[in-house]
Length: 101
Image 1 (cartoon, rainbow, N blue to C red):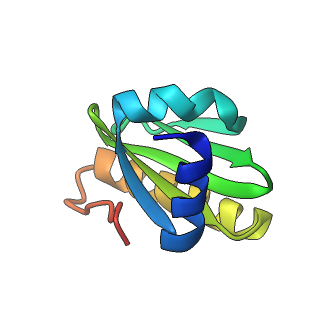
Image 2: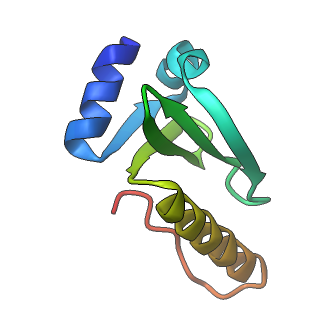
């Protein structure tokens, strides 16, 4: 998938799922803003392309979920919520991350 097509899908759909190989082909066109090790599901990447903020998650080693985020405030809330959830999972809470909502 071309980067422009991916950006258009992100803007229209909000959440886009790609296989890892497809993400790796376009990853360099996104500016990495921050990276957080979840210790359970790879890295949580916050990136930007053409002013569009995204979170890139790894629900499994073969998939990436790219989620559009509205602004810096939403980035902060999203990252904190995800990291809190992963910490609870590490402690054995039995909770799950909803990657596709």
